[in-house]
Amino acid sequence: MMAMVALMMMACQDRNAYTISGTYEAAGEGDSVSLQLVEGRKLVDLQKVPVVDGKFEFKGIADSVQMAAVTLGDAFCQLFLEPGQIKVDLKVGEMSFALGTPNNNAYESFMSDMKALDDEYAAIMRSVQNPELTDTQREEIRKQLDGFEEKIYQVIKNSIADNAGNNFGLYNLCSYYNMYEPEELAPVLDTYITTFPADVRLQQMKKHNDLTLETSVGKPFKDFEMTDVEGSVHKLSEYIAANKVTLVDFWASWCGPCRAEMPAVKAAYEAYRDKGFGIVGISLDNSKEAWTAAIETLGMDWAHLSDLQGWNCAGAALYGVRSIPATVLVAKDGTILARNLRGEAIKEKLAELLE
Image (tube, rainbow, N blue to C red; front, side, top):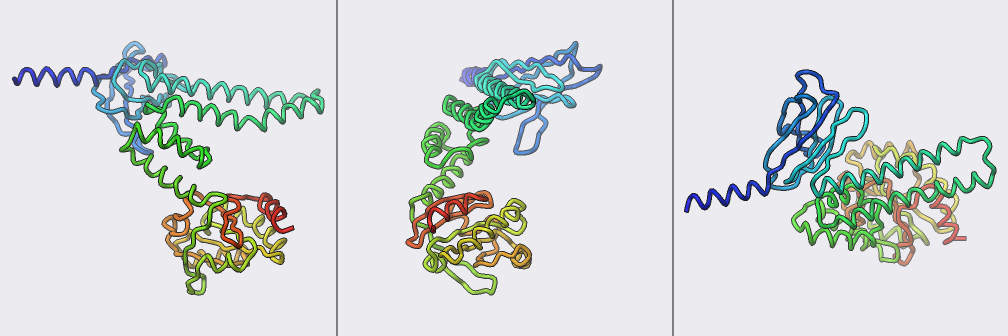
């Protein structure tokens, strides 16, 4: 009986075994290459083996698929550590990829597609430098550039859709989910959660996306109350009821992009405040002193509220805010009219609504 159990355990280990066979032609005498697990922003040593005649090999058991890296000095290859025969051609000065197993093959294919797009973009940018281009040709190049971001997004989204059943797809979704509109992201998350029901990152993304959908354009705003700079408690609904249109502006004194955005917000306020436009700043600060000093320094002459809880701001959580600046434009009747307007887009929307 014990022998049977031992055989079964060995068979299980064989199914989970991996071999990484690699080459590194630039290796010097006595060089060793490391296999490291990628844990957040850290690399954790797993194995280290010598490079002999330009070749190296790692062997082990992978009970689950994990992100890892093979490194030697400046040479680096990110890969999926998973059962099977993995081949790595380690290089210096250019990207190295692993091949031989499902997730690594998918990763290499995706990165090859992205490199092709990068090369195409570089070629277009070089062509712009041609002094002999006609105005018509320059306009055509401009159109190509205008559509290039969407072209990149589509390649990424196609890859995520095609790899919904594997860890590479999950890795890419976690890396690029911010490029999706909330309505578009919802079915993608549902598909991945079916495959990876215990993944905490997916659960967090779904929670955030559901909140964003609940406060998307056309939906009613969510009320909350916070303290103003004088220490008085106010509801968001007070300000919305007082204006024809209200911009709820999530920001913080420590946020560089928020501060850079303030001239545009101020310009919109000055242009439309007499026509029924109001602003409520919701600060994600922790320090009251920093919050109030920034209001004065930046000349933000409108209502301000905060619970001084930083990223744990209750109001921001209700609207699914994960990055700032973030804005929500609300009509007097409480209907959300727009989200995340920036720069001149604020004034353009106000012109549409108030003129």
